Length: 136
Image 1 (cartoon, rainbow, N blue to C red):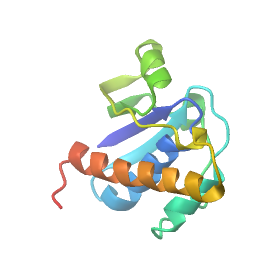
Image 2: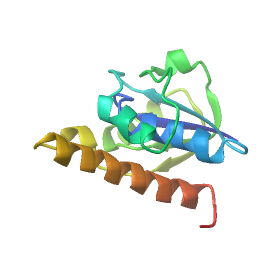
Image 3: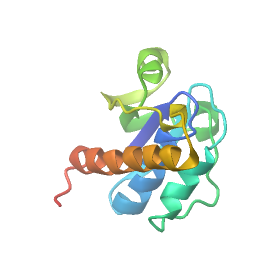
Image 4: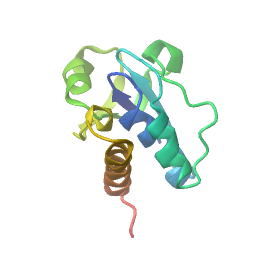
């Protein structure tokens, strides 16, 4: 199964989803991620993935053109703006929307920000298990 995780900047949620999927379900799912307006990978995205022992070498924000693929079994939007743009994108595949808060928008000290990234990572793990029908 080929899946694309799509967000606006491809900096946090879609990066986490790609890395988590390839790490946890790589035996049956091949994951990609892209942004409709790619930025750069947020450092706390890298940190919360590394906390789980997930490799982060080579993570970078990508556009759809950089991904190169157009045909997916599943396209998952993780932010509302990407979900709004998704119907106009030249992609094929079943589409699913999982609305998660953008952890990069959290204000406060480093600890508060890190907790927000961990919450989103952990929510993603639960949602990915549901999506790929994996038992606990």
